[in-house]
Image (cartoon, rainbow, N blue to C red; front, side, top):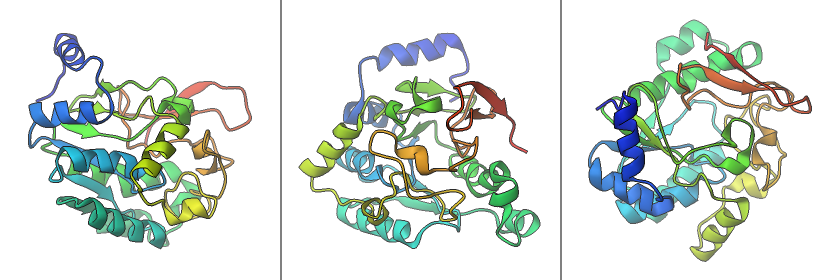
Amino acid sequence: MPVDSPVKQNEVLEAYAGLEGRGLIAAFARDFKGRVALLSSFGAESSVLLHMVSEVDKHIPVIFLDTLKLFPETLAYRDRLVRELGLRDVRVVQPNVLDIEMEDPAGTLHLSNPDRCCAIRKTLPMDKAFKGFDVMISGRKRFHGATRADLRFISFDESRIKIEPLAAFSALDLQTYMVQRALPSHPLKLAGYHSIGCSPAACTAKGGSAENPREGRWMGQEKTECGIHFTANGKIIRTAARGEPERMREAAVA
């Protein structure tokens, strides 16, 4: 059900205006029953959105991208949250074996071409996993800054609607939500990681803060996004290298 015209998009925006958090999830789960899925990394802040989804409907599919380069702590955290929240439909998606054999046989592509590494380990598997779904639930927040600073609760691409229930949440909102509901923290967050992706140091390093959690991702590089979050033309949005004056540019996935 592509919402591919401004008229249809405006109708969607008007129908769900003013909703966020669990209310936004519940409305789309009701109106797009069976066609909504959550994309989750089971990372440092993931428990909040997963908890909201579990309260709406424990059977909403949760798509988990296992890049084959994740921290073992992330896999253990995933298993714990699935168990404690009672999630009933967690789908583990991995890269195509042939893509890895052809383009990253040594497992070092992230050092020479991190965008392509993300493409074969995240973007391509995600695109395949979301076929048949009209709505993607994502956990991005505006306080993460960079390309996320102007994040909207609802956005569109050529094939689906993306909703961001936590767009307006602050670091304090997340912490308060977790404490009030006794949600467990990711083990690596307790070790100083504020945003957690793949395990190579070039991808995820200790650092950042509650207010700027993504400072430890691709540290020292221009790269700030993995590419799974779409733009209008399907390209990765990138920002200036950290410490440089803010400017925007786009780089196509190789």
